[in-house]
Image (tube, rainbow over all chains, first blue to last red; front, side, top):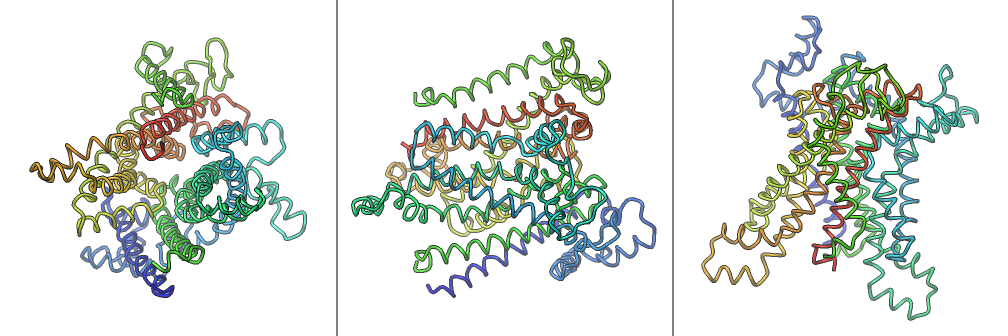
Length: 323
Length: 270
């Protein structure tokens, strides 16, 4: 089928998943023990606030009407009000989002680049010493809890060696400026969190790339390339790698959801002022609207990311379109 | 056996066996009960009387490690059993029966795979309470879809094989085929999935505990790290290193064993 029809189909799949997750989130909140008004308004809310909440969420109306109100609210960006920060949930999230994007962006870039290289090196020499060493590091990398690695980094590099700051986005007392000093300060604070976050994903990508390379290197076109006299270096990097990249790209989208867990935990340890630590704080203060609001926000982001990855995949792999 | 030749996997098995032994023998080996506070001065580095030091509340970290093995293994095994049972049933029925049922079940599993598991786990535990059983339930709930898809894929390929036709010719009904013919052939896949599932469950439980979402009446390694978060910046490395190593080694052990089992049992990789 044509590209346009394929894209239309993928978008058509996306819509029920989107609604499914909004409905699921609604059910999870409503089925929780306790009184919904207290959950949404906070334990110690005044009577007027409780009445306002009841009216906004339509808690005095039948369940299906509440669901409709909820869906409409979410689609309009109204995720409720955080009773700790005293502002709409979406505002709180958007305020903290840039720090998270910075962290994840840097972490992912490093992880993908280093992971790919490690995977290629490993995959082109299967069962060699290099391969075993790299794969051992990989197993350790994704088995170790990410918040523990974070704590270890803080202990060794920040507390004992005093090489890096312990927490935060920038040094206490200063505000951010785009000067060299400002950017350098942020980068200095960024180093440890990024290192922590990328270890896990580096391990995953290394393994994935290795498996993918192992399978690609057995294909006929590689034998042809070698027979043609193509240099081994080009065989690996120009021919094999390009074809092995496809599973890695697809997995990037799927990994998004897993990544969120790592981000939440890492940000908590480093007190990095992003969305992850916002969630931890919200949990600590039992700020239910913020907790559920972050969940919906992240879910929708992940679903969109999956959709984008799917579409990128079709562009990269022409075989899919002509099925 | 191929498994024995895989040194890493054997190491994994040895670690798991020792952890199991420690868990069972904890009552006899541990000098103090798990949550007993102020048995020694607070935040003491490792010494002869406290081999792994004491934490913020004066608890013996070594005893904490020993009793933590029980929680880790309990959570790991129960979630593995639960999620594999549900996942296998759904995957088997879905793959074998096919049709509308298959479509609906696959849509549901897709939904679960897209949702951010960890955040959903956080939301559920925050709203429904952080008892140990809630945590086990939530982890099982979020793990079965992946297993269902794996089993279904295997069933889809198995059901085209001749032995299924042979069974049908001999008069076997659908249930017979599913449980007598197909189930034994999926054993390798089930074992590998269950083992890897244990490792993942231990890590998720540790993550939830680290955020404070664990049962306060139960001592798990993750919770020890949660409490350590407030105290370690003064340099008390022993409250971070020891529980963390426990989690890491146990998770690695199950991963190594799962990988080893996969290498040994998975016919496609030979």
